[in-house]
Length: 448
Image (cartoon, rainbow, N blue to C red; front, top):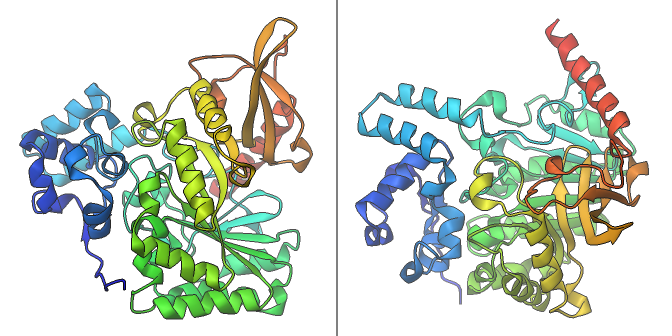
């Protein structure tokens, strides 16, 4: 029997009142406050009480995943903020310093602010991205927060209160008109933030219209969410959890495919009775749960963690989907690891598990041109190279066309790689540059 649990959110102002944090030194609590001036901090009572092993702090993986660490900022950046806090500067002055630091941390990587934004009637459509032909991402206004924030999150800029850096739909429903007109789109991915922070009524307002005939071309509805990890009670004992299950059941009964794209970063997130009950309720109505996470230093940069996680996911009826590379944004220097090491984690985890567990594609980089997967490391004509491929691309013709990059043991992201075998550019570069130029001109014309 799962007892009701009332969600309690903790933010920076609660650092001194979270009982478990009294186990930390005053200096460690101060570090959390300092770093959270730059990166958004939010956690909840489920994470604090049921997921973190406080006897293992600060090394506990879920603690690293949800609580700010001093190393997330360089010494120079940390000292700037710490000095401002110690000096008692007004909040607005600290915010100016924080924004200067944020601007240096690549807040929206891979062309999200321009290259992924579609136009309708010569105007950008707010709150959606259309990078790949078949799939449109929708950022619901009411879903622009989370039950807790991951410290590594590549969408951290969504949560810092800067509307210029936030994706969110407006009230005009122009995004629906765009989807109606683009019959090549088969998949809608609701993302954020986290759509599952929305109430049943708000969620229904986004999902239910897709059941109408004008959206018959939409075959698959995906919801990107960390709720199963950070607040599984959303599907079990929340006041509208039954209504949400009924809504999902109705979507499945309509003939649409509904997939929960669940973010699980460590096996611990799969252990509680609450998450197991939530998974059972979703699977009972036929919802497919696919899992994904990046490889994150201090959290899961170990093959055993991944093989254990995949095995438990399959045991619970989930489908391992992606192993990502940590994106080149935010606290990348703290959480990212070289591509060579990420590939070794993937390879070693892959060979430890049975075929049922080998559905996870990886390591994958969601880079500017598309989803680039590292297929291997080999030698060609005496040159050591990364063997790369596109799983998705801005031009579908690029998909599954192998290409090669020079082996670089220090590279942590696709942009660090250079063409191999005496090539001066990757095969897609000229076309990509033209695409990006055209999109930039659209935005420039708006300003003019």
